[in-house]
Length: 144
Image (cartoon, rainbow, N blue to C red; front, side, top):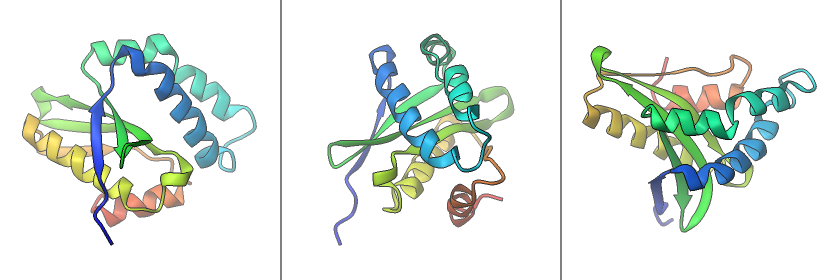
C-alpha cells in the first residue's frame, strides 16, 4: 500500500467558507448521536462564525486544511503559547469519507512536529468524553 500523500495548507480568510463547510459535515457526523437535538447547530454557529474564525487566525491560531492526494479531507487548528512552552490542539476534524485511513494519526504527528519546532514541550487537547472514536485515536497516538 502506498503511503498517504497528505499535505497541510495554512488556511487564510478566503478559506473560511470551506472551513465552515468541513465543520458542518464533520460535527453532525461526530456529535448528532452524542448531543441533544439542536446542540450541534448551536455550537457550529458559535465556534465557526466567520468573524470568530477570522479573529482566531489574527491571534495566531493556526487553522490548516488537510489535503490527501489533492482532495480536501478536513481541517485542524492549533495554537502555541510560548510563555508556557505549550501547544493546544483546538480542532481536528476529517470529513467522514476520509476517516479510518490513518489521516488523523498523520495530523496528530504533524501538529506534534510543528509544536515542537515552535518550542512546545507539551501538546494538549480536549475531547468530548463520549466521543469514543476520537478517544481511541488519541490514545493510539500516545495521549492520556
